Image 1: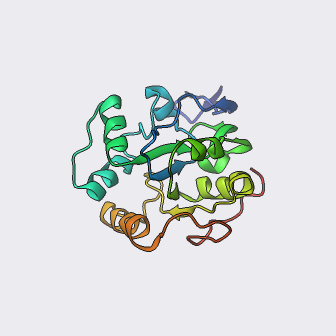
Image 2: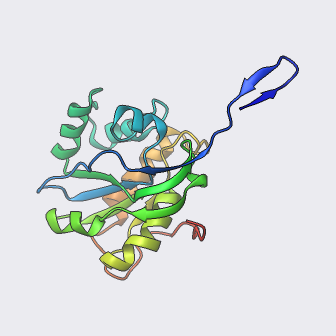
Length: 197
């Protein structure tokens, strides 16, 4: 805590914290598509479910992909995903992070994605954003032997993408170009290697 500015406001410096993923994946025996984020934001950790920040456009993209309104409640959203055979999880099981900043993520331990693949007939794996993709390729691919495709991030930080552009590119990658699991072959251009993760 430190004083700041001529008006004497108190600013609280955000500290790096070691966190563990607080909630389980959405998946069942019918899931065909797996979408991985990086690590839950502070807002998502607060509601104990994926994409809890109101400005994150993930749920709006889902509405456009499946031409169906997404419920506002957690159980409704879980049912929506399972009905459309979409599994949802994150690449990272634990890490050190400052607030909700993906760029601050360090000291990564990955989720056991291989265990999920053993339980569900997943045909396609996608990562929501470059951080998730880099973590997946660095830590998870060596265990699964399956590359993931990188999707443009639905985060509000990805301001270069409008909702229309996001939905169009997600639709093309998920339902267009990707043709199932590619063992040893990349499905999309890889994000930058995050050597400090």
